[in-house]
Image 1: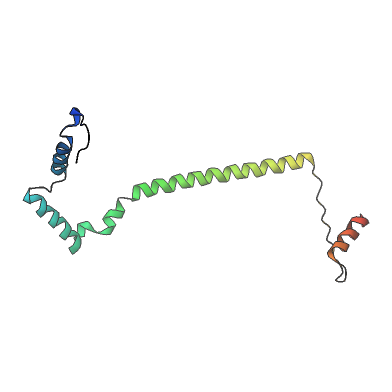
Image 2: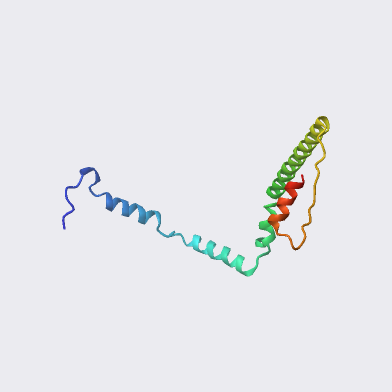
Length: 125
């Protein structure tokens, strides 16, 4: 089966690429590599004290403390900003002398429909 004309620059490129990939992904020929790998796996499996879970977690402590400090700073800043906004609103209301809001509660008789009670409320104003 013919693939058509081949560019001379790529002639034999597939073979070269295959050879390079085989070399790159070939298993190590050194027997010491395999014995070191086996000993490290067995140390983890047998429960070597140097490989305990808390030794892994201990490495996370500085990052956790830094993240907690940043979170506290951001929360404190947000709290100060919210209090400042509340003080500003209270000041503006005191300066303007805003009138108190009146609330009127209307209880309609059980025999009256909601539409009739609304109409009666509007007409009595």
